[in-house]
Image (cartoon, rainbow, N blue to C red; front, side, top):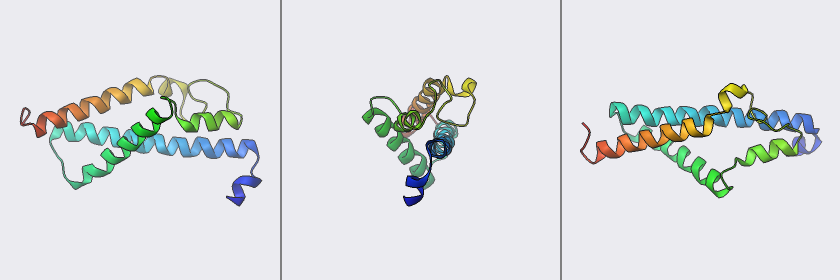
Length: 121
């Protein structure tokens, strides 16, 4: 943490944006894994990892009033508000992220529940 204390706000913003971008990619891959599992029926112990990551993401998001805590941190270190100020992705990708990935998560979970309930083979 000593390095963080010596870093200027621009450096801290870059670090927050990099961390948020990495988390975004991991969570997107986890969501796609969930949907893949729901569509294909391929399940196993590997599914525990993306489902756990997604559960943590949902808890953090809901617990923070449906806002990402890294967004507030990015603003604290000088990010300008908008859709793409807290990651390295363009605004065109970030604008619909919440609804896109929420819909995919619900779809993946619904398909898995149908499979586990024996209603989808």
